[in-house]
Image (cartoon, rainbow, N blue to C red; front, side, top):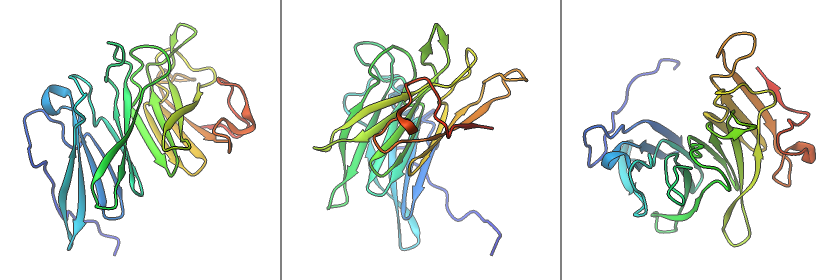
Amino acid sequence: GSTWSSVEQLVASDAADIAYFGEAVAIEGDKLLVGSPGHQSQAGAAYMFERRFGSWTQVQKFAPQTLTAPALFGASVALSGTRAVIGAPWDETDDTHSGAVYVFDQANDGLWDQAGRIAPPTQTAQLFGTSVAIAGERAVVGAPWYQFNQQTTGALYLLRLQTGGVWQVTDRMLPEGMSDGGRFGAAAALSGTQAVVGAPQASTTVNQSGEVYFYGIGITGGHTDDLPVGVPSAVDRRR
């Protein structure tokens, strides 16, 4: 029927104070991924659940050993088949809080192994990993504190799985005419070759009214029509 009802409530097997379990969630079929960025003094963690015999069971905890607080690992999560992407927007690279995302693949034995850690190519403190989305061999990552022309506009990065199983950043999308502090990349979704990006504090005719951008992603991994970084493609639409 059309009536929704609460079926089950889940908690982490090692539930702790101020863990923020449930800050981010993703579901696909019988798999459920839950982020807990406050875990272990904000180093963060994520938990994989599987539905078995009608109920959800925790099957694995993700907490890379390289994490240091406050990485906020688990602030964003995404699932696509046997791949999971987990954002850590305060993760450090070269002693800077530039952020990072972690990719995990499910092996034949059902366990999930880390397949990569991706950090942004440039800049510090851009909160790369605030949002993540994945569809097959493509992923997008939001960095709402990215600075362009001395303004904190935000950015969206496109990632592609390369030969040899290595994930690489292949493009960066910048919003056209974005106001300072628009937080472009605070939210992101991906379906095939279509990406949707939220900029909740963008100002148009109304202060901080927010905008949503639509992108068509080219086959090569860049914008549709291979337009330069920073120039919206012909299929961009804002609502």
